[in-house]
Structure formats: structure tokens, C-alpha cells
Image 1 (cartoon, rainbow, N blue to C red):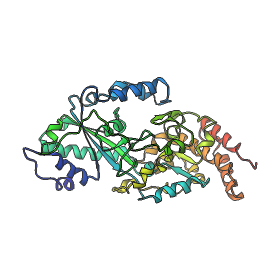
Image 2 (spheres, rainbow, N blue to C red):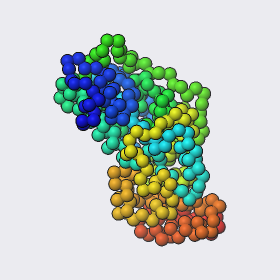
Image 3 (cartoon, rainbow, N blue to C red):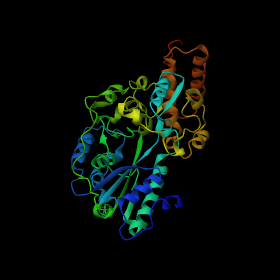
Length: 387
């Protein structure tokens, strides 16, 4: 904590948000704004959530239907919460537009295994939650409040982070449902620090004013629909409307069973997540390189080979994905996803050597990891147009 403490002044009777912003900078976090919490703040978003659930678009994500009202009421996560401080953490390991060209090149190589950029390094839940915890400690010391007056929320907590970030008026919800900012595009992780401190207490310095939390900024997507058009499985039914059941990120991460056969060819070589709607977004030309080393690719996941990853044993999978978000899907789903990628590779004009390597890898793995993996292997082998 010493590196954070040194960036702020000694606690005194009238601390201010500017001191918090100094701490944010020291922690490598982006200030995405402050929201005054009040009854009915997220009513419109809650109504849309209920409609989304009624349409069944959550698929296997049954947790989304548990206590949906709680998602629109942060005080149920921290009783007495008055304010939400929204922060971001950039995760792009490469800077500038080159990353988009690199990802496109990887998608065009059927031998490659494409893992979503965010998942190639350490699990962001742990990284961001730890830094929010440090921020909470700084604020507790500044305002001389107990640590129980703060709660760090990172994705896993039932909270509408994108909606809160939009209310803070430093970003907006894009047509792909993700938060967009002028400075970073959408290549950021979102975190929220709930506090019992009021906005008036946080904005103590003269001239500082709380943003009206009941007005979201107008989006800056205009008539652009690049993200909607780029989706390989056409998971967007319209602007701001995602059917998770068709989303590759959902299919490769959240979905537990067999992946629908009609969707498998559309997945290409995407084996964990999908960045297509972000890759084509014009705002992501401004995405900046991550400030933390935690999100650098590990075990060659930025240039991985399908056959090589498919050979990992369960112990190798668990060891190499230690501390990674990927580990939670388990070895069987990992192999299921890779088998689809290998099957799609067999649909492409591979060299004889590469084709044999793919077929041999599939045959050698069959019978080792359960019925679900076997079914996907059988499907993959059946895709070989030269068999």
C-alpha cells in the first residue's frame, strides 16, 4: 500500500475526490465517474432485464434470473450505500490499431486457436478486486470510516456495471451492449466500489459537482452497425439486443453441454470467447495498452495452435491456467471448444501434413474425456472434406 499512500496527501478533516483520483492513478485504474444512488435509478434497465429473461435469451445462465431486482438496487449488496465509484482497467496487451489487424490475421489461419484477448493473462476478477480493495482502504483512511462502509464489486456481484458507468456519464452503452469510452473504446474491465459516503462528502472541494445520475449520456455510435454485422453467429437481434444463446462467448464459456451443430461452423477457430464486435468497433482504434503486466499473454495464448492445445492433459490444463479465467470452464469444455475449432480447420484447404496432424489429434483424444467430448470429436472428423 505504500505506493498508493504516497500518492495522496495525509488524511484530514476535508478530504476530496481529487485525492481519490490520485489513488486511482497510482493503482492503474481509470476514473469512470461517480453515481449518486437513489431509488429507481436503474428501473429502465431492470425492465429491459426482465424482458430479456422472459425471452429466454440468458440460456444456461440461470444466475441471471435469481433475484433480478437486486441487480437494480446496489443497497442490497451494501446496505446504506449512497454512492457508486465506477472504475476501469485497461487490458489490451498491444497498443493502437495493430492489435485489430493481428486478431484478424489469427482468425484467418485455421490452424490457430483464438482466445479472447481479455483471457490470455491473469484472471481480471482477482486483479481488479484486489485494486478496488486497496482503493477502499485509502478512502476509509481519508474519511476515517470503517472498511465495512465500502464494498468492491467486480462482475461476479449482481450489479449492472455498464448501466452505472453510463449513468456516471463518462461512457455509453454501445450497440454491442458493452461500455464504450472515447479514450479507451471498450477494451477495459469494469469495477464498482460501493460506499456509504454520500456524493456531497466525496465532492467536498469547492467547484466540484455531482453529475445528475438520472440522465445517461447520448451514445456516440451514430448510424454505425459494424459490431452487429461482424458477429459470426448473428447473436444481435438489433442494436443493444443480444441473444446470449447464439453468442460465441456464451457458447464457449457459459454453456455446459453440447454446442448446437448449426452454430459450430460459424465459430471458426474461436475457442474461448470472441472479440469480433470489439475488433471492428471504430472506437477501439483508441484502445490503449494495459498499464499492468498481469494481462500479458501466458503460455503462448496469443499465438496458440489448435493441435497443441488439444494435447494438454487435464493436469496440464489446470496447471497452465492457474490464476486464469479460463480454468473455470474445466478441461472437458476446453476440449469441446477445441474439437470444434479442429473440425472447422478440416473444412479448410490445409496442407497434407496439417490435415493429418488434426485428424491424428482428434482420433488420439477420442474415448479419453467423456461422451460430450466424443460427440464433438466425431462431428469434427466428419467435417474432413478430403477423408
